[in-house]
Image (cartoon, rainbow, N blue to C red; front, side, top):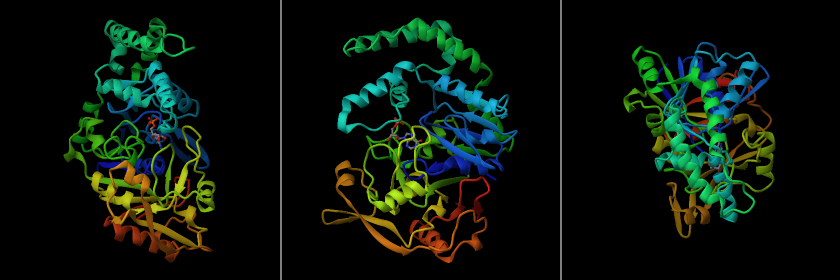
Length: 425
Ligand code: IMP
């Protein structure tokens, strides 16, 4: 294997958790580089379901090092809970889970601010996961953030926390019926979280560097997806981190030359959770049937995902901004019942036909998708197929159209929830 970045090509939920879990077999280290517990990765092993939010899904393999990088925002209680749940199910995390000292911490006021800002936006709300992700990254960028390492420098931690709480309490005074925050209470809680997390806290940039220098393979795990990236997504309807491949460099402290491959994960159709433009969305019974058959409900919030056809305008953008060298198509089996399958090949806006993903929100909101219709493979199932030759010809044709349109090879196809329902090409 090589050093590979796994990145979402759509609006997240492409099935990266399962792919990372499968590719971990051939890796030594799995490293997460951005986002927080807004992500939800579902992995099914022999019928047992695991949902991970912060810890890379590689943890489900023995003897693999899992890293939570400096680019991730960590809610310490969420991390402790996830560690405890894994331990309770017999999964060892001791010695093989490392969390960057430089990771910023989600504080209780970030969660409050997330909710408050959404409320104020009314109909223009982002539809965040409400986990405090945006406000935590805001503090990081504005140099008011609290890092994992601060928990081990109590004086410094107390000073930063007191300054932040004083600011927040000034703001809270303006909100009726909201109790002011107690800095001491938060301080004591977080010091206790620090004690519990101490065995995992690490100079992860050095650990990764040493691993790479000693010839080990690293899998870089992206959360969310390209269209939720703060720079390259449908801003402002995005998350607050760099979900694209570039984020792996800054979010872990590695150089671009360490990367051998960048694989983009795409669902065989498209979904989105939260607000914001989605040109190939289906609000009819076809969208409904994709949602039901694909169990398209958020792993983190349980929200129903919006569903639509595969969108080549989105994928072309993802190929470019991530420099994809391979594509991974997931949930192909969800299309099994379709007589016809549509693919979006462009957007029509006023008199123009757009092939490149527009950056302007009014264009994205006002465009209409232009489709090509392909034959489905109804009657012959792809579910659980584990060799490419055994796929129905029309399903192979669908994969062929994706490769030809995007000029990137499809290297893996996933045909079901289980770890073994996968085709490597
Ligand atoms: P936040 O990341 O909670 O701030 O939410 C910002 C936007 O990103 C919202 O539309 C969320 O629904 C979306 N989002 C965040 N994490 C995920 C994810 O893991 N999968 C899909 N959508 C996500």
